[in-house]
Length: 220
Image (tube, rainbow, N blue to C red):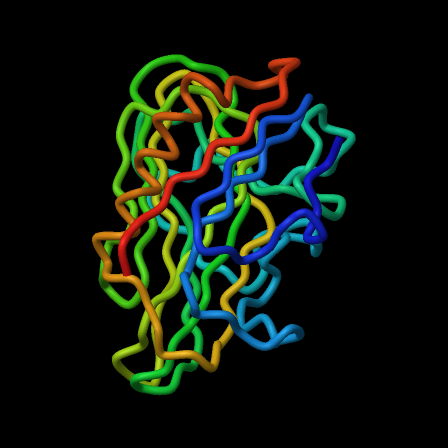
């Protein structure tokens, strides 16, 4: 079962659903709900061009690429997904977008970690601020992550950093949209995503034939 955009919604909680072959993790932005059809500022966020057009690769890209669904691992959406590692070296992709100083932006992306082997690392950086910095994540199927940030200038860079020992990270469905509300969680709230990675290592094990719902609330 694929996880599509229709499976996502903004709530006042972190919601984790475990279903056969797919996991949906929605990170709340509390009251920060954007326009229903806000434009995605990211170019080629789903890698549907079949390559990294619109993105800049950096670091070790020896085992990095865009692959079709037929390659053996289904994308979270569409027909392609980005794959990172193993390379025993840090690398990733970044993209710079135009922003309005002081405006709030919602970030959303689908992430999975294939095979639990060696040292692993993932980080999300926006506008020079690291919102997720995780080491040692176990394997888990597609999960959706999202949160809100405030731009400080007229442009900002979204950066995904990866390191894989004997495994692969997969990325899909990247989006950044401007929202209208100013209610935004503190950067520390993003740290709850790290807890999500921990859950991914256990309850969110890939292909686990179970259904569970866990809700984690946090203060505004």
